[in-house]
Length: 509
Image 1 (cartoon, rainbow, N blue to C red):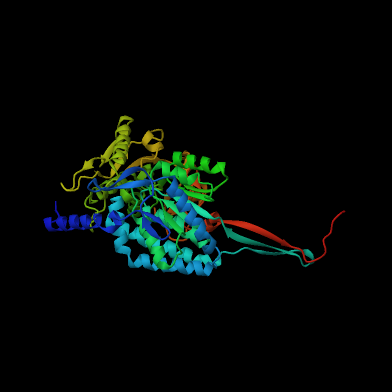
Image 2: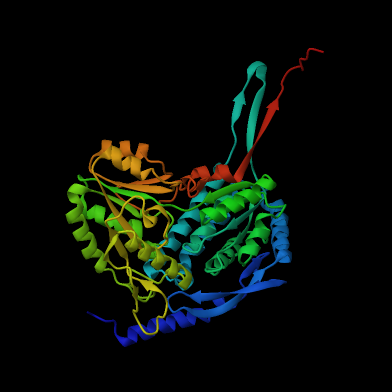
């Protein structure tokens, strides 16, 4: 086996060390009124760790009630002026921010790796996608408008789309910059202001986004960051001056947030878990189907909510499909996330590693067979994080726990099927409905199956692609609302109807 030379390993360790000691890590990680700051009260600390080494970079203080109140107060103050600007003016700020993100792409990507442990090439793609999203909503901002309806006798009605007010957001740890970008840019485009709580596992790049917005000309108080754990999120969700909450994470937490928002009749957007099907028909392009199945399971160490972890393969092609899949999966390089040729980085934490390994062991007890991976890998004595070889399970059945529940790790469950009707029924047999994939050369079949699947985001002959402008969100318990598309603007505005009488008022009295 070829091994990277010691100089290369040393270089990348030094690179990681230099970032960990940089201001992005060591400076205050709250962001209020356009600048970094420490909490005024500390209700606890959490460790910021680099997943690849499992080393603690620093302790981060959790924000309490005073800091949440201050963040919301600053956002309310910012709303007074920001909401009065034209959509064109707001859009210009967002477009400038997108350009700054592109200029700082490498710094953002390096820090994203430090936060998540994902490979550097993947982090670069994430940052580019985030810049495109901010740019996209900058372009849409000037087009936010109502409708005009002519009525009888010269009367008319018109509608106005108005911002909601202060929007709160809570993000997950797998795509930290994407969470902040996907939630803040449409909110700001519509004239809202924003208070965001990143995951305590990945607190860094959301603050950098605040600095980007500041440099682009966003007024102070319009984008605010508060760091913290569960209690901080609860304080934000239940704050009486928050008009809407946007949350990405688990179904149980999303349910609690929705319940809390219901008490004050807050607007809510939820992007929750998935247990999505990836269906491989016998007439597929086999190489593309294998690639798609890998994209559906192994990006970001399998820690992707939309992953197609239930891979249904037609019985007639199971042999060649599995052979190619295993051969290519074994070639994936597990290693230092900062190395350019690494394709598998580190699991986010020991806790998540333990969860993934428990699912693999339970799968074996329930009758599944591991044909590839599923083991902790030591890639370098200096990298003491939790690296897991991508796992492929066969002999899976629909009732198995690993097939029913979201693992959030690189664990692919392969099932076989005989007919189109059968696989549609089995694919829909889930409380979740976030995404799904279909691999076939028959366009009529692709359309037919896509129409029948109960999922919000579907991919035909590809998987886990997120072009800007394509709405993303789920059916059933996978969430409410949409992100990343024009529909998102509907979830950050409210409609005001105005009737205009042009004649005398008629009344029966």
